[in-house]
Length: 112
Length: 425
Image (cartoon, rainbow over all chains, first blue to last red):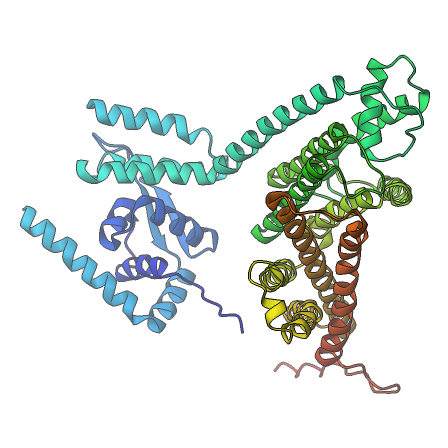
Protein backbone atom coordinates (compact mmCIF):
# COMPACT_ATOMS: atom_id res chain seq x y z
CA UNK A 1 0.00 0.00 0.00
CA UNK A 2 1.36 3.40 -0.93
CA UNK A 3 1.55 5.79 1.96
CA UNK A 4 0.12 9.14 0.97
CA UNK A 5 2.17 11.53 3.04
CA UNK A 6 1.05 15.01 2.20
CA UNK A 7 3.41 17.11 4.30
CA UNK A 8 7.01 16.58 5.37
CA UNK A 9 8.22 17.30 8.89
CA UNK A 10 9.68 20.64 7.80
CA UNK A 11 6.46 21.59 6.05
CA UNK A 12 4.51 20.81 9.21
CA UNK A 13 6.86 23.10 11.13
CA UNK A 14 6.14 25.91 8.68
CA UNK A 15 2.41 25.22 8.85
CA UNK A 16 2.50 25.22 12.65
CA UNK A 17 4.20 28.63 12.58
CA UNK A 18 1.77 30.09 10.07
CA UNK A 19 -1.27 28.57 11.82
CA UNK A 20 -0.24 30.20 15.11
CA UNK A 21 -1.17 33.62 13.67
CA UNK A 22 -3.33 32.84 10.65
CA UNK A 23 -4.51 36.39 9.99
CA UNK A 24 -1.14 38.05 10.17
CA UNK A 25 1.32 38.43 7.31
CA UNK A 26 4.74 36.92 8.01
CA UNK A 27 8.02 37.41 6.17
CA UNK A 28 10.52 34.72 5.27
CA UNK A 29 13.22 35.45 7.81
CA UNK A 30 10.60 35.66 10.53
CA UNK A 31 9.37 32.14 9.66
CA UNK A 32 12.92 30.85 9.30
CA UNK A 33 13.78 32.15 12.78
CA UNK A 34 10.76 30.47 14.36
CA UNK A 35 11.14 27.16 12.57
CA UNK A 36 14.93 27.03 12.57
CA UNK A 37 14.90 26.22 8.84
CA UNK A 38 17.54 27.50 6.43
CA UNK A 39 16.50 29.59 3.44
CA UNK A 40 17.32 26.76 1.02
CA UNK A 41 14.76 24.56 2.80
CA UNK A 42 12.16 27.15 3.73
CA UNK A 43 11.59 28.82 0.38
CA UNK A 44 10.97 25.63 -1.62
CA UNK A 45 8.36 24.71 1.03
CA UNK A 46 6.71 28.11 0.72
CA UNK A 47 6.76 27.80 -3.06
CA UNK A 48 5.10 24.37 -2.95
CA UNK A 49 2.44 25.61 -0.55
CA UNK A 50 1.76 28.58 -2.82
CA UNK A 51 1.59 26.29 -5.88
CA UNK A 52 -1.04 24.18 -4.11
CA UNK A 53 -3.09 27.24 -3.26
CA UNK A 54 -2.44 26.91 0.47
CA UNK A 55 -0.43 30.10 0.77
CA UNK A 56 -0.87 33.62 -0.50
CA UNK A 57 2.08 35.93 -0.97
CA UNK A 58 2.50 39.62 -1.61
CA UNK A 59 5.10 42.34 -1.42
CA UNK A 60 5.02 45.06 1.20
CA UNK A 61 3.05 47.94 -0.24
CA UNK A 62 5.18 50.82 0.95
CA UNK A 63 8.90 51.13 0.45
CA UNK A 64 10.48 51.11 3.93
CA UNK A 65 13.48 53.24 4.72
CA UNK A 66 16.86 51.54 4.83
CA UNK A 67 15.83 48.10 3.60
CA UNK A 68 14.18 46.49 0.57
CA UNK A 69 10.49 45.60 0.56
CA UNK A 70 9.69 42.24 2.12
CA UNK A 71 7.79 39.37 0.58
CA UNK A 72 4.93 38.48 2.93
CA UNK A 73 3.08 35.21 3.42
CA UNK A 74 -0.23 34.10 4.90
CA UNK A 75 -2.23 30.87 4.75
CA UNK A 76 -5.32 30.88 2.58
CA UNK A 77 -8.56 29.59 4.10
CA UNK A 78 -7.99 26.30 2.28
CA UNK A 79 -4.39 26.19 3.49
CA UNK A 80 -5.48 26.92 7.05
CA UNK A 81 -7.99 24.06 6.95
CA UNK A 82 -5.50 21.61 5.49
CA UNK A 83 -2.74 22.77 7.83
CA UNK A 84 -4.93 22.47 10.90
CA UNK A 85 -6.01 18.97 9.86
CA UNK A 86 -2.44 17.89 9.16
CA UNK A 87 -1.18 19.30 12.46
CA UNK A 88 -3.97 17.53 14.33
CA UNK A 89 -2.60 14.26 12.95
CA UNK A 90 1.01 15.19 13.81
CA UNK A 91 1.02 16.92 17.20
CA UNK A 92 4.79 16.35 17.51
CA UNK A 93 5.38 19.00 14.86
CA UNK A 94 3.36 21.52 16.85
CA UNK A 95 5.42 20.75 19.94
CA UNK A 96 8.65 21.10 18.01
CA UNK A 97 7.58 24.44 16.57
CA UNK A 98 6.56 25.63 20.03
CA UNK A 99 9.92 24.63 21.50
CA UNK A 100 11.73 26.38 18.66
CA UNK A 101 9.62 29.51 19.23
CA UNK A 102 10.43 29.53 22.95
CA UNK A 103 14.12 29.04 22.23
CA UNK A 104 14.10 31.98 19.80
CA UNK A 105 12.21 34.12 22.31
CA UNK A 106 14.76 33.18 24.98
CA UNK A 107 17.68 34.19 22.75
CA UNK A 108 15.95 37.48 21.95
CA UNK A 109 15.37 38.24 25.66
CA UNK A 110 18.96 37.39 26.61
CA UNK A 111 20.17 39.53 23.72
CA UNK A 112 18.07 42.43 24.97
CA UNK B 1 25.01 50.47 2.49
CA UNK B 2 28.14 48.63 3.59
CA UNK B 3 30.35 46.62 1.30
CA UNK B 4 28.81 43.27 2.31
CA UNK B 5 25.27 44.40 1.59
CA UNK B 6 26.37 45.85 -1.73
CA UNK B 7 27.91 42.51 -2.62
CA UNK B 8 24.67 40.71 -1.69
CA UNK B 9 22.63 43.16 -3.75
CA UNK B 10 24.93 42.62 -6.73
CA UNK B 11 24.70 38.84 -6.32
CA UNK B 12 20.92 39.08 -6.13
CA UNK B 13 20.64 41.17 -9.29
CA UNK B 14 22.86 38.76 -11.23
CA UNK B 15 21.32 35.52 -10.01
CA UNK B 16 17.67 36.52 -10.32
CA UNK B 17 18.06 36.96 -14.08
CA UNK B 18 18.69 33.25 -14.65
CA UNK B 19 15.53 32.14 -12.79
CA UNK B 20 12.39 31.58 -14.91
CA UNK B 21 10.05 34.57 -14.83
CA UNK B 22 7.30 32.77 -12.89
CA UNK B 23 9.74 31.99 -10.05
CA UNK B 24 11.68 35.20 -10.06
CA UNK B 25 9.86 36.88 -7.17
CA UNK B 26 10.78 33.99 -4.86
CA UNK B 27 14.47 34.49 -5.55
CA UNK B 28 14.00 38.22 -5.02
CA UNK B 29 12.28 37.45 -1.71
CA UNK B 30 15.30 35.54 -0.42
CA UNK B 31 17.68 38.34 -1.35
CA UNK B 32 15.38 41.06 -0.01
CA UNK B 33 15.76 39.68 3.50
CA UNK B 34 19.42 38.76 3.37
CA UNK B 35 20.35 42.18 4.72
CA UNK B 36 18.27 41.62 7.86
CA UNK B 37 19.82 38.28 8.73
CA UNK B 38 22.47 38.59 11.47
CA UNK B 39 26.01 38.54 10.17
CA UNK B 40 26.84 35.12 11.62
CA UNK B 41 23.89 33.45 9.81
CA UNK B 42 24.01 35.52 6.63
CA UNK B 43 26.41 33.20 4.83
CA UNK B 44 24.01 30.25 5.25
CA UNK B 45 21.11 32.42 4.13
CA UNK B 46 22.97 33.51 1.00
CA UNK B 47 24.07 29.93 0.31
CA UNK B 48 20.45 28.78 0.58
CA UNK B 49 19.40 31.53 -1.81
CA UNK B 50 22.04 30.48 -4.32
CA UNK B 51 20.92 26.86 -4.04
CA UNK B 52 17.34 27.92 -4.64
CA UNK B 53 18.35 29.92 -7.71
CA UNK B 54 20.45 27.03 -9.05
CA UNK B 55 17.58 24.59 -8.55
CA UNK B 56 14.91 26.82 -10.06
CA UNK B 57 17.09 27.75 -13.01
CA UNK B 58 17.85 24.06 -13.70
CA UNK B 59 21.54 24.91 -13.55
CA UNK B 60 22.68 21.50 -12.29
CA UNK B 61 21.11 19.84 -15.30
CA UNK B 62 22.42 22.51 -17.64
CA UNK B 63 25.97 22.11 -16.34
CA UNK B 64 25.69 18.30 -16.66
CA UNK B 65 24.35 18.69 -20.18
CA UNK B 66 27.13 20.96 -21.38
CA UNK B 67 29.79 18.77 -19.75
CA UNK B 68 28.25 15.86 -21.68
CA UNK B 69 28.27 17.89 -24.89
CA UNK B 70 31.95 18.67 -24.38
CA UNK B 71 32.70 14.97 -23.81
CA UNK B 72 30.78 14.12 -26.98
CA UNK B 73 32.72 16.69 -28.97
CA UNK B 74 35.98 15.10 -27.82
CA UNK B 75 34.63 11.61 -28.66
CA UNK B 76 33.54 12.84 -32.09
CA UNK B 77 36.99 14.29 -32.71
CA UNK B 78 38.56 10.94 -31.79
CA UNK B 79 36.15 9.11 -34.12
CA UNK B 80 36.89 11.44 -37.02
CA UNK B 81 40.59 11.12 -36.36
CA UNK B 82 40.42 7.31 -36.32
CA UNK B 83 38.27 7.20 -39.43
CA UNK B 84 40.50 9.67 -41.25
CA UNK B 85 43.65 7.67 -40.53
CA UNK B 86 41.96 4.29 -41.05
CA UNK B 87 43.34 1.51 -43.21
CA UNK B 88 42.28 1.18 -46.86
CA UNK B 89 39.36 -1.09 -47.57
CA UNK B 90 40.39 -4.69 -48.05
CA UNK B 91 39.19 -6.16 -51.37
CA UNK B 92 36.24 -8.47 -50.89
CA UNK B 93 35.25 -6.98 -47.52
CA UNK B 94 31.58 -6.50 -48.29
CA UNK B 95 29.63 -6.93 -45.03
CA UNK B 96 27.27 -4.14 -44.02
CA UNK B 97 28.32 -3.95 -40.37
CA UNK B 98 29.30 -0.78 -38.58
CA UNK B 99 32.87 -2.01 -38.73
CA UNK B 100 32.64 -2.15 -42.49
CA UNK B 101 30.91 1.22 -42.59
CA UNK B 102 33.66 2.90 -40.58
CA UNK B 103 36.35 1.18 -42.60
CA UNK B 104 34.53 2.24 -45.73
CA UNK B 105 34.32 5.80 -44.48
CA UNK B 106 38.08 5.82 -44.07
CA UNK B 107 38.52 4.22 -47.45
CA UNK B 108 36.60 6.97 -49.19
CA UNK B 109 39.44 9.35 -48.48
CA UNK B 110 42.54 7.20 -48.38
CA UNK B 111 41.98 4.59 -51.07
CA UNK B 112 41.44 5.63 -54.69
CA UNK B 113 40.07 2.13 -55.41
CA UNK B 114 37.04 2.73 -53.18
CA UNK B 115 33.81 1.71 -54.83
CA UNK B 116 30.55 3.60 -54.89
CA UNK B 117 29.15 1.13 -52.39
CA UNK B 118 31.64 2.18 -49.75
CA UNK B 119 31.07 5.84 -50.52
CA UNK B 120 27.37 5.26 -49.81
CA UNK B 121 28.22 3.50 -46.57
CA UNK B 122 30.41 6.39 -45.53
CA UNK B 123 27.58 8.84 -46.16
CA UNK B 124 25.30 6.54 -44.14
CA UNK B 125 27.76 6.67 -41.23
CA UNK B 126 27.83 10.44 -41.22
CA UNK B 127 24.03 10.61 -41.38
CA UNK B 128 23.72 8.08 -38.55
CA UNK B 129 26.06 10.08 -36.32
CA UNK B 130 24.31 13.33 -37.14
CA UNK B 131 20.74 12.03 -36.83
CA UNK B 132 20.93 10.18 -33.53
CA UNK B 133 20.92 13.22 -31.23
CA UNK B 134 18.02 14.64 -33.22
CA UNK B 135 16.07 11.37 -33.03
CA UNK B 136 16.60 10.98 -29.28
CA UNK B 137 15.47 14.54 -28.54
CA UNK B 138 12.50 14.88 -30.84
CA UNK B 139 9.03 13.85 -29.81
CA UNK B 140 8.54 10.45 -31.30
CA UNK B 141 9.19 6.80 -30.74
CA UNK B 142 12.57 7.25 -29.03
CA UNK B 143 12.26 10.55 -27.28
CA UNK B 144 12.25 12.69 -25.37
CA UNK B 145 12.85 10.84 -22.16
CA UNK B 146 9.93 10.53 -19.71
CA UNK B 147 9.82 13.27 -17.13
CA UNK B 148 10.80 11.18 -14.13
CA UNK B 149 14.05 10.18 -12.45
CA UNK B 150 13.50 6.43 -12.95
CA UNK B 151 13.24 6.72 -16.74
CA UNK B 152 16.35 8.91 -16.88
CA UNK B 153 18.29 6.45 -14.73
CA UNK B 154 17.19 3.45 -16.81
CA UNK B 155 18.02 5.24 -20.06
CA UNK B 156 21.43 6.47 -18.94
CA UNK B 157 22.20 3.15 -17.21
CA UNK B 158 21.15 1.12 -20.26
CA UNK B 159 23.21 3.26 -22.64
CA UNK B 160 26.19 3.06 -20.29
CA UNK B 161 25.87 -0.74 -20.08
CA UNK B 162 25.77 -1.04 -23.89
CA UNK B 163 28.77 1.26 -24.09
CA UNK B 164 30.68 -0.95 -21.64
CA UNK B 165 29.68 -4.10 -23.56
CA UNK B 166 31.03 -2.71 -26.82
CA UNK B 167 34.25 -1.57 -25.20
CA UNK B 168 34.64 -5.03 -23.63
CA UNK B 169 34.08 -6.62 -27.04
CA UNK B 170 36.62 -4.33 -28.65
CA UNK B 171 39.13 -5.05 -25.92
CA UNK B 172 38.45 -8.77 -26.18
CA UNK B 173 39.02 -8.63 -29.91
CA UNK B 174 42.24 -6.72 -29.43
CA UNK B 175 43.74 -8.85 -26.67
CA UNK B 176 42.49 -12.28 -27.62
CA UNK B 177 42.26 -11.87 -31.37
CA UNK B 178 38.60 -12.77 -31.51
CA UNK B 179 35.45 -10.70 -31.46
CA UNK B 180 31.84 -11.69 -31.06
CA UNK B 181 31.18 -11.47 -34.78
CA UNK B 182 31.44 -14.49 -36.98
CA UNK B 183 34.59 -13.43 -38.81
CA UNK B 184 37.99 -12.33 -37.61
CA UNK B 185 38.96 -8.71 -37.97
CA UNK B 186 41.92 -6.50 -37.34
CA UNK B 187 42.25 -4.97 -33.86
CA UNK B 188 42.06 -1.49 -35.36
CA UNK B 189 38.63 -2.26 -36.82
CA UNK B 190 37.33 -3.48 -33.47
CA UNK B 191 38.68 -0.46 -31.64
CA UNK B 192 37.12 1.81 -34.22
CA UNK B 193 33.81 0.01 -33.82
CA UNK B 194 34.06 0.38 -30.06
CA UNK B 195 34.82 4.08 -30.19
CA UNK B 196 32.00 4.79 -32.63
CA UNK B 197 29.50 2.79 -30.60
CA UNK B 198 30.66 4.47 -27.41
CA UNK B 199 29.99 7.75 -29.17
CA UNK B 200 26.49 6.61 -30.12
CA UNK B 201 25.71 5.36 -26.62
CA UNK B 202 27.07 8.51 -24.98
CA UNK B 203 24.99 10.61 -27.38
CA UNK B 204 21.86 8.77 -26.33
CA UNK B 205 22.74 9.19 -22.66
CA UNK B 206 23.41 12.91 -23.01
CA UNK B 207 20.25 13.52 -24.98
CA UNK B 208 18.40 11.76 -22.19
CA UNK B 209 19.64 14.41 -19.79
CA UNK B 210 18.59 17.28 -22.03
CA UNK B 211 15.34 18.84 -21.01
CA UNK B 212 12.95 18.93 -23.91
CA UNK B 213 11.80 22.51 -24.55
CA UNK B 214 8.11 23.18 -24.49
CA UNK B 215 6.46 23.22 -27.87
CA UNK B 216 8.99 20.89 -29.46
CA UNK B 217 7.91 19.67 -32.86
CA UNK B 218 5.84 16.50 -32.72
CA UNK B 219 6.62 13.95 -35.39
CA UNK B 220 3.72 13.28 -37.71
CA UNK B 221 2.24 9.86 -38.43
CA UNK B 222 3.93 9.70 -41.83
CA UNK B 223 7.34 10.64 -40.47
CA UNK B 224 7.04 7.99 -37.75
CA UNK B 225 6.02 5.36 -40.31
CA UNK B 226 9.00 6.19 -42.51
CA UNK B 227 11.42 6.09 -39.57
CA UNK B 228 9.97 2.77 -38.34
CA UNK B 229 10.16 1.26 -41.83
CA UNK B 230 13.79 2.35 -42.27
CA UNK B 231 14.67 1.08 -38.79
CA UNK B 232 13.08 -2.33 -39.45
CA UNK B 233 14.72 -2.60 -42.89
CA UNK B 234 18.18 -1.68 -41.57
CA UNK B 235 17.65 -3.88 -38.51
CA UNK B 236 16.90 -7.00 -40.52
CA UNK B 237 19.77 -6.23 -42.87
CA UNK B 238 22.15 -6.07 -39.93
CA UNK B 239 20.68 -9.26 -38.43
CA UNK B 240 21.56 -11.20 -41.57
CA UNK B 241 25.04 -9.76 -41.83
CA UNK B 242 26.20 -9.20 -38.24
CA UNK B 243 24.07 -10.71 -35.43
CA UNK B 244 26.16 -9.23 -32.61
CA UNK B 245 25.86 -5.70 -33.89
CA UNK B 246 22.16 -6.20 -34.61
CA UNK B 247 21.57 -7.27 -31.00
CA UNK B 248 23.47 -4.29 -29.64
CA UNK B 249 21.47 -1.93 -31.85
CA UNK B 250 18.23 -3.61 -30.77
CA UNK B 251 19.16 -3.22 -27.11
CA UNK B 252 19.95 0.49 -27.57
CA UNK B 253 16.67 1.01 -29.41
CA UNK B 254 14.81 -0.93 -26.71
CA UNK B 255 16.17 1.16 -23.85
CA UNK B 256 15.32 4.36 -25.74
CA UNK B 257 11.86 3.04 -26.56
CA UNK B 258 10.78 2.03 -23.05
CA UNK B 259 12.09 5.23 -21.47
CA UNK B 260 10.61 7.59 -24.06
CA UNK B 261 7.74 9.80 -22.99
CA UNK B 262 5.52 8.33 -25.68
CA UNK B 263 5.76 4.83 -24.19
CA UNK B 264 3.58 5.95 -21.25
CA UNK B 265 5.19 3.39 -18.95
CA UNK B 266 4.85 3.93 -15.22
CA UNK B 267 8.09 4.67 -13.32
CA UNK B 268 7.32 1.63 -11.14
CA UNK B 269 7.32 -0.60 -14.24
CA UNK B 270 10.78 0.60 -15.22
CA UNK B 271 12.02 0.31 -11.63
CA UNK B 272 10.71 -3.26 -11.18
CA UNK B 273 11.97 -4.31 -14.61
CA UNK B 274 15.47 -2.87 -14.36
CA UNK B 275 15.80 -3.67 -10.64
CA UNK B 276 14.76 -7.30 -11.20
CA UNK B 277 17.31 -7.62 -14.01
CA UNK B 278 20.11 -6.22 -11.88
CA UNK B 279 19.17 -8.60 -9.04
CA UNK B 280 19.17 -11.65 -11.35
CA UNK B 281 22.53 -10.69 -12.85
CA UNK B 282 24.07 -10.06 -9.44
CA UNK B 283 22.89 -13.34 -7.94
CA UNK B 284 23.84 -15.26 -11.06
CA UNK B 285 27.31 -13.75 -11.11
CA UNK B 286 27.90 -14.44 -7.43
CA UNK B 287 26.66 -18.01 -7.80
CA UNK B 288 28.62 -18.71 -10.98
CA UNK B 289 31.79 -16.94 -9.88
CA UNK B 290 34.69 -19.21 -10.67
CA UNK B 291 36.59 -18.08 -7.58
CA UNK B 292 33.94 -19.07 -5.07
CA UNK B 293 32.88 -22.35 -6.70
CA UNK B 294 29.37 -21.93 -5.29
CA UNK B 295 27.67 -23.91 -8.04
CA UNK B 296 30.30 -26.65 -8.05
CA UNK B 297 30.20 -27.15 -4.28
CA UNK B 298 26.42 -26.69 -4.02
CA UNK B 299 24.74 -28.44 -6.95
CA UNK B 300 21.31 -27.74 -5.50
CA UNK B 301 21.89 -24.07 -6.29
CA UNK B 302 21.64 -24.76 -10.02
CA UNK B 303 17.86 -25.35 -10.06
CA UNK B 304 17.41 -22.44 -7.64
CA UNK B 305 19.22 -20.10 -10.01
CA UNK B 306 17.17 -21.37 -12.94
CA UNK B 307 13.90 -20.96 -11.04
CA UNK B 308 14.97 -17.46 -10.08
CA UNK B 309 15.72 -16.63 -13.72
CA UNK B 310 12.14 -17.60 -14.60
CA UNK B 311 10.42 -16.26 -11.50
CA UNK B 312 11.98 -12.78 -11.36
CA UNK B 313 10.55 -11.46 -14.67
CA UNK B 314 7.18 -12.89 -13.69
CA UNK B 315 7.35 -11.24 -10.27
CA UNK B 316 8.47 -7.92 -11.79
CA UNK B 317 5.60 -8.07 -14.27
CA UNK B 318 3.06 -8.88 -11.57
CA UNK B 319 4.34 -6.11 -9.30
CA UNK B 320 4.17 -3.60 -12.15
CA UNK B 321 0.63 -4.66 -13.07
CA UNK B 322 -0.55 -4.41 -9.46
CA UNK B 323 0.65 -0.80 -9.25
CA UNK B 324 -1.70 0.38 -11.99
CA UNK B 325 -4.41 2.52 -10.40
CA UNK B 326 -8.06 1.52 -10.74
CA UNK B 327 -9.97 2.70 -13.81
CA UNK B 328 -13.60 3.05 -14.66
CA UNK B 329 -13.28 0.98 -17.81
CA UNK B 330 -12.36 -2.64 -16.88
CA UNK B 331 -11.15 -3.37 -20.41
CA UNK B 332 -8.77 -0.44 -20.29
CA UNK B 333 -7.50 -1.60 -16.90
CA UNK B 334 -6.85 -5.11 -18.26
CA UNK B 335 -5.00 -3.78 -21.28
CA UNK B 336 -2.87 -1.46 -19.17
CA UNK B 337 -2.01 -4.17 -16.61
CA UNK B 338 -1.02 -6.49 -19.42
CA UNK B 339 1.11 -3.88 -21.19
CA UNK B 340 3.00 -2.83 -18.08
CA UNK B 341 3.56 -6.44 -17.01
CA UNK B 342 4.94 -7.56 -20.38
CA UNK B 343 7.27 -4.57 -20.53
CA UNK B 344 8.54 -5.10 -16.99
CA UNK B 345 9.25 -8.77 -17.73
CA UNK B 346 11.03 -7.96 -20.96
CA UNK B 347 13.10 -5.26 -19.28
CA UNK B 348 14.08 -7.69 -16.51
CA UNK B 349 15.25 -10.26 -19.05
CA UNK B 350 17.10 -7.71 -21.17
CA UNK B 351 18.85 -6.07 -18.21
CA UNK B 352 19.88 -9.42 -16.74
CA UNK B 353 21.19 -10.72 -20.09
CA UNK B 354 23.14 -7.56 -20.78
CA UNK B 355 24.77 -7.48 -17.35
CA UNK B 356 25.54 -11.22 -17.34
CA UNK B 357 27.21 -10.95 -20.76
CA UNK B 358 29.20 -7.91 -19.67
CA UNK B 359 30.27 -9.58 -16.42
CA UNK B 360 31.38 -12.82 -18.08
CA UNK B 361 33.24 -11.22 -20.97
CA UNK B 362 34.61 -8.46 -18.74
CA UNK B 363 36.00 -11.07 -16.36
CA UNK B 364 37.70 -12.79 -19.28
CA UNK B 365 39.30 -9.55 -20.40
CA UNK B 366 40.42 -8.49 -16.93
CA UNK B 367 41.69 -11.93 -15.90
CA UNK B 368 43.14 -12.75 -19.36
CA UNK B 369 41.13 -15.97 -19.41
CA UNK B 370 41.10 -18.11 -22.51
CA UNK B 371 38.16 -17.23 -24.74
CA UNK B 372 36.73 -20.04 -26.78
CA UNK B 373 35.63 -18.65 -30.17
CA UNK B 374 33.03 -21.43 -30.42
CA UNK B 375 31.27 -20.08 -27.33
CA UNK B 376 30.37 -16.89 -29.21
CA UNK B 377 26.96 -18.30 -29.97
CA UNK B 378 26.26 -18.89 -26.27
CA UNK B 379 26.54 -15.20 -25.43
CA UNK B 380 24.57 -14.16 -28.47
CA UNK B 381 21.91 -16.63 -27.37
CA UNK B 382 21.90 -15.15 -23.86
CA UNK B 383 21.39 -11.67 -25.31
CA UNK B 384 18.64 -12.93 -27.59
CA UNK B 385 16.81 -15.33 -25.26
CA UNK B 386 16.91 -13.19 -22.11
CA UNK B 387 14.38 -10.59 -23.27
CA UNK B 388 12.36 -13.33 -24.96
CA UNK B 389 12.11 -15.35 -21.75
CA UNK B 390 11.30 -12.18 -19.79
CA UNK B 391 8.57 -11.29 -22.26
CA UNK B 392 6.99 -14.74 -21.96
CA UNK B 393 7.03 -14.67 -18.15
CA UNK B 394 5.76 -11.07 -18.10
CA UNK B 395 2.96 -12.05 -20.45
CA UNK B 396 1.89 -14.94 -18.19
CA UNK B 397 1.92 -12.83 -15.03
CA UNK B 398 0.23 -9.94 -16.86
CA UNK B 399 -2.54 -12.28 -17.95
CA UNK B 400 -3.00 -13.63 -14.40
CA UNK B 401 -2.96 -10.23 -12.68
CA UNK B 402 -5.24 -8.55 -15.23
CA UNK B 403 -7.74 -11.43 -14.89
CA UNK B 404 -7.73 -11.09 -11.11
CA UNK B 405 -8.02 -7.32 -11.08
CA UNK B 406 -10.72 -7.16 -13.70
CA UNK B 407 -12.43 -10.55 -14.22
CA UNK B 408 -14.23 -10.82 -17.57
CA UNK B 409 -18.02 -10.76 -17.36
CA UNK B 410 -19.91 -13.83 -18.59
CA UNK B 411 -21.82 -13.47 -21.83
CA UNK B 412 -25.23 -11.91 -21.31
CA UNK B 413 -24.17 -10.36 -18.00
CA UNK B 414 -26.21 -7.20 -17.52
CA UNK B 415 -24.21 -4.04 -17.87
CA UNK B 416 -24.34 -2.05 -14.67
CA UNK B 417 -25.71 1.43 -15.12
CA UNK B 418 -25.17 4.11 -12.53
CA UNK B 419 -28.07 4.66 -10.15
CA UNK B 420 -30.16 7.72 -11.00
CA UNK B 421 -29.44 10.76 -8.91
CA UNK B 422 -32.00 11.44 -6.16
CA UNK B 423 -34.41 14.25 -7.01
CA UNK B 424 -33.45 17.57 -5.57
CA UNK B 425 -35.95 19.22 -3.34
